[in-house]
Length: 166
Ligand code: FEO
Figure 1: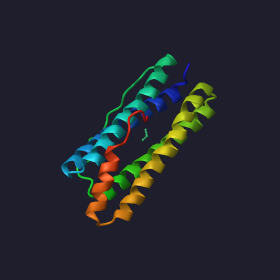
Figure 2: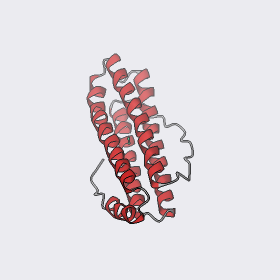
Figure 3: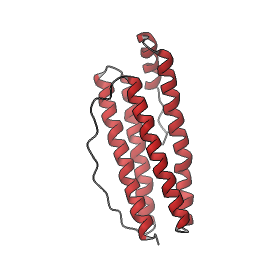
Figure 4: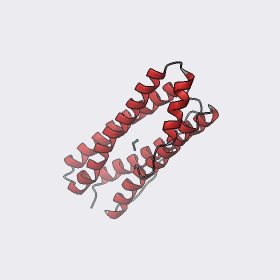
């Protein structure tokens, strides 16, 4: 049985992952408006991935006979500036999520909930990957600088993001 404290924190993380999905969907629309279909496709995939994260936690709460309580999701911004500032906002958001996951992992230890710790290990590893991916894209955008041709080439590559990531 989940402790009340851990259940509340897991539910908050379900909402946080859905919030991330909402944010990345808004960024996808922003990239569409900016005529960067590859970045748009990447953000759409990212939004789906965040829903997958929410469902992992959602299912875990239910599997442990817990109560799912979804929270409110604030409306995201609609204009995120350049591709670089948008990806910087993505990285900043992922860093926030990493801190939330780390807190959740610590709490599951404090509550002696080993199944939750095992489940959350996946998220700890995933966050390293999420931050690395955003950092790599930012580094390449900085290399591209004001070169429109380089940005278009990168947009093509972003659009080839394969499925199957989570
Ligand atoms: Fe679910 Fe991008 O963290």
